Length: 279
Image (cartoon, rainbow, N blue to C red; front, side, top):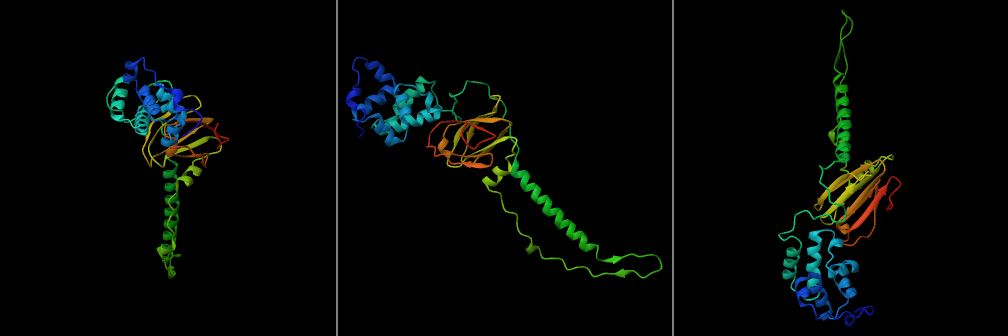
């Protein structure tokens, strides 16, 4: 148990039972104090950041990064302080519009704006594979036609046609198979020096992301399922918001970003042509 903030310093107020009954954050705070736990204790046990625990206990759910993450944090904190999460989730739904959570979490970190059609970046992986296949096919076709030309050759009228022996065709086993490009290969191939290129992959789980160009125009706003990947390009910079940064793997201008983000962490990032480094 942490010594810095003692639970005795946070004794519940007894003069407002109606607020305690109606407020999700107040109920969580009272249960934590009754259990003899500090905010540091709860944060260490649940891996929910201290700032988010304080915000939820104050009924401020904006730092959670959306309705889906807010409900997840409420469930986690309730279990940590020995509360049944179901009534708290029902109360949260009643206080914030009710109903089941939308499949795609809301984006409270940016101003509300109408969702525009997704602007898809070029599919560099498919283009690279198609180019390799075209080159191999052209070389094979050229070699095959060169072998056919070794048959009968016509000469001037009145002379006997000369014959040449056709070369023995080589075995197909000598042709190596094209290696399948890895995510890092495609990221490097998709990184022209005169632009900033950012590849976002949901490697360890699903995450909501928002991407904008240097003019503030939205490039993508949605949920990446585990295994999905998106690539964004701009002439100057790319602005990102990651709803669950711990699930995301980034390649910026062909180089992997190795920041150790925690699961559930919401990160705001900006990358330019001179990166990788957070702008």
